[in-house]
Image 1 (cartoon, rainbow, N blue to C red):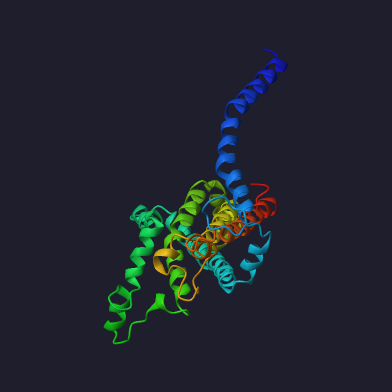
Image 2: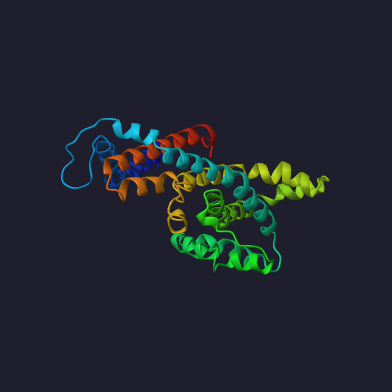
Length: 296
């Protein structure tokens, strides 16, 4: 068979695959992404409680209410704080443990599983578990403080410490996921480069700095993307722990949407919050992909 014929056959195969698989994907994407976002944008222009058809058009007034709300400012600040902690503590911790546990030694697999187990737990279950741990009267933390003769704190009931308590749970739950990403990347690296560097006299630190870490850059960029998007969408951990309180001190943008939009039957207001969150997430995703992951 000639080269031209082979090229035509390959093109025909690709066209067949596109015709077979693209329409179902487009239909699902339209039904579950495009239409809901469009509906939310439409509802955000109404003062609507969710019953009947929306008729009271108020334009961009809901967006004005959102940006003027003190609770939204706190929620936005908390989301930024979660991102900072995730990038500054969670990912370095995951990378450090991955480098240590990627080596083959007795107990390495058990330790990997132990650190990964928190990620397997459902977010709601994790929140309920830590709500008992943090309980200032009967929780594990209260027992530890009383053992040392101190008055136990009520972390979840204080505006000063509620967000700190949530951040601890976030780091504990999600670092194992990033650790496993890094371990998979480390095990896929070409070990001949490491061996050649050691033969040339490179120290362990030099190998780590100039070979191992640079080869991990694509995985690190992917992990940063997951951490930021996950931080913007954090909700399931917040509700069992604090429900955004006390005094909105631990709200995130999604919990703020639920607490001030859905539960209070302010569907137009909640839709405006959802549109704002969607714009933030899409803007970050597109920008990050364009500037940091274009070669990955």
